[in-house]
Length: 100
Image 1: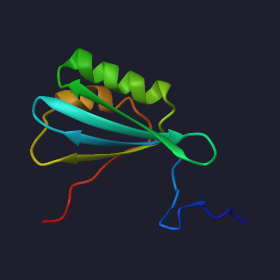
Image 2 (image 1 turned 60 degrees about the horizontal axis):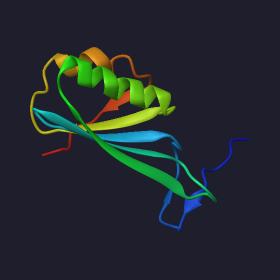
Image 3 (image 1 turned 90 degrees about the horizontal axis):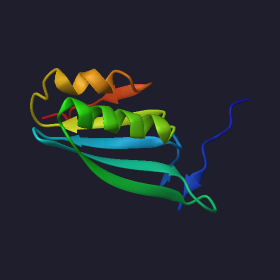
Image 4 (image 1 turned 90 degrees about the vertical axis):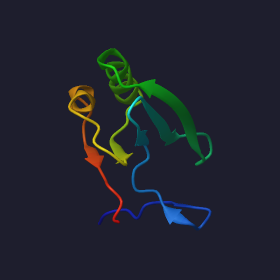
């Protein structure tokens, strides 16, 4: 029988303990990682990356080294093919666009 995900402060269930949120802009990507912390408290870390190939590769390396298993991306415009160069190397990536 599958286990139920643990609850944090009764507000939501933790479905993915190692995840990232990416806010993609033309010249920068802001990333927030959530990973397990002490005593069931999640640890968050925020970094900003540029959009050149070398910087995207550094972003992909950071996600992989951190053990990130799931990610969500938000972008209000076309991000081009450069972002897919490194992003395609990250396992289980998901892209979402808000409904308008």
